[in-house]
Image (cartoon, rainbow, N blue to C red):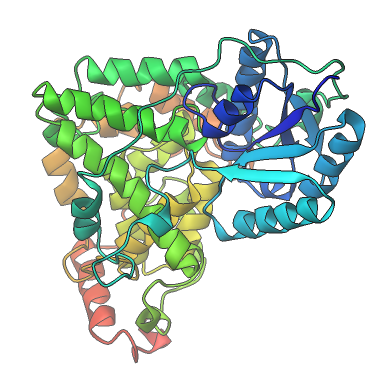
Length: 476
């Protein structure tokens, strides 16, 4: 008799190589039914992330066709759709890769218990992180609250070698019905921005591996120093691919370790950046409030402003502060933002403009194609001063000083701000095509004056920090 198939539920793991849940299912020799479900979590994604996810699903579907398989698409409540598929296919077990975000963890827990109550097998696997959060602890048995000790704890830990992709997958005797990806309209909110951003995306497993190899072939050498200069092509850009699981963190880790053994100077710092992502998920697991509340409770009384007119100008890349505006416009044109830019725009919003970090966090979630829930939250709280390992008095970035240090020849600012050049670049002009039409901006729009004097903004922030529990809202 034909053995019952295994349903493989894909989420943020759209690859075939080094995927433990797929390897385990393949080893059984049973038919495999790959599934992606457009559920409430997908619907809640920001416009850019949801659009980029759709691109990844499309490429992954094509990869499965070359493996004698296909990706079944369903839309609805995950548990309901999985139960329907079990009835339609006779499957008795479901595999998926673990999530480390509270909402999806709770969803998965309920589905696992629900399936087991119905007599079915449900198994979750590692795959989205290097070190599962509960496996890393201090000598006292607690979790790490500071990055550097966390790095020291995991730097020498053994990481399993990546597992190659199967050469082919066993198909079921009959495939269940599938939705059409186009009918989901995952890119519906991107409008004209999609055409601008699309050329900058490296979608799918093959593109991700190509990106990794390009980085290993040159930029990894001077990475530690060059990564801070946004005019250079000095970073791996793998955040986009790690977000959708198009490349495994284990593959990236071992590639970085090989580069380190070969003497590439920047390899260790590259590995540290990969572990920074791990630290974000470590904190997300142990202190899930980091996603939506101040990580440090003493900041709950801090008088940040809510959304405001200054924040809207920040969103539009029209603050009159060129380095800030260039970084924001880079996001609209490319879908991502250089890490130096992320620190500067976050510091400027939360400190010079004294605006709640959650305003910025929500906007990044809407606009970044490499949006990651854990890294986004930790990054914003780190910049604001309310998060882990924060030094608020010393981390008030001066955008002008940062520009003079990291964009000395103004290449980055001219690349993305049309108003600063007599003959703007195509990328600078593309900003006006990418942003919402309701903003009513065009290339003839005058570049604005500064929203705030930088020295005054710094002093205002320092005064508020010094009295952060009792500072009156009238300060603003």
